[in-house]
Picture 1 (tube, rainbow, N blue to C red):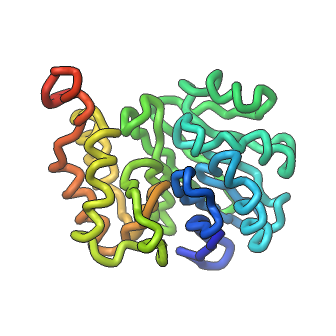
Picture 2: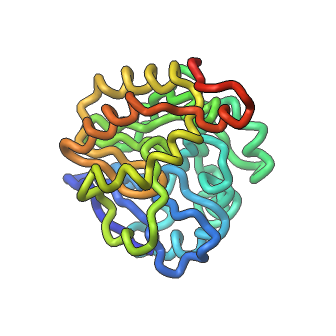
Length: 255
């Protein structure tokens, strides 16, 4: 599994993990983010059971496992956090698991003994030494209980499935988009199908557009930086979403 530092200053660091060349073809490719504040760390969307061994190996090349004090799950999908019980075996058993209150009893099916810290619908913060992470509501984008994570000092926004792209293996040689227009083809089908609420899309864009963002990091595909941040938000704001409703005879979704 590849790791790359995408932000660093004294006592504060963002590490991206993913693009494992040995990953089974059946598995959707995922990005995992580790944010370090002082001697503590949080893993954003730590991944599924199948990627746990390479993720753990790559992580422990960077930081001691005992520094991981928090795990964050943007929503309930298995590629987000089915590895939860395995992380609890190697981390402190009281490692805090942060996710929407809506999914606490569902995620308990992964690990009933996990120390789950429910996030209210309006969001909140997670504190690391010297680092304050803002939890931005992203409900119905695509999950009904969903959050983005914003680091105002690093100016990075973690978006989970928002911004996801299904890339061929030959395009996985960088963590960053280099040609936005060419990248659209790998995002479009996913967003048309997985996002179903225009109101939710518009509310989320209105919320994050107020933030000072240098980098957007989705859970699948490549990251957006610089002018591509605005390009992505503008593209998403115009996209016709809810394509799955067409098969139900409901036409376009106006909700």
